Image (cartoon, rainbow, N blue to C red):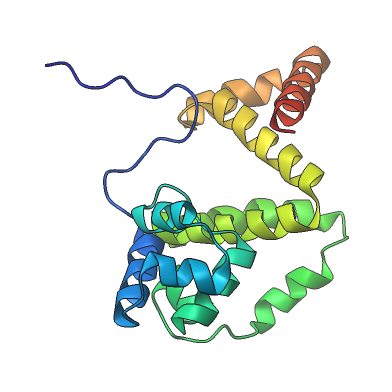
Length: 193
């Protein structure tokens, strides 16, 4: 028997739920609540709740806040599996001050890879989901633009090997190549609206 064909459009589905999905189910079971109970308390559809617990989809920031209230769980625990409170980090305050500075691009290029390497895949996915939910809630157009950029760059960079990056780096000097990338990003963002 041949394996099922891989989906061409849409995210690849994992066979096991991620940490967030498992913790949502654990919190619900700990409170002896059914999906219907949570639906009635939050207004989140039963289908969405089932999808959160199976790991098929992730709750947005609004849904996450509703779930934390009903499940009496902290956002930290649901997202990261720890009760350690979020603390203001003095080192990060310096980055906030650089937010509108031309130096921010350089700092981001140095800091982001370190952050991405230090987190597990589940933790990074939770962080990016939280960021994406916040951006989408504030400005759907910006969210679509960022999502389109991420998809186009993922297609261009392939596995992200040094050889692929070097080749891409050379191509990026060509104005026509960069214009084509901008057209692809605009088309993807338009398709998302």
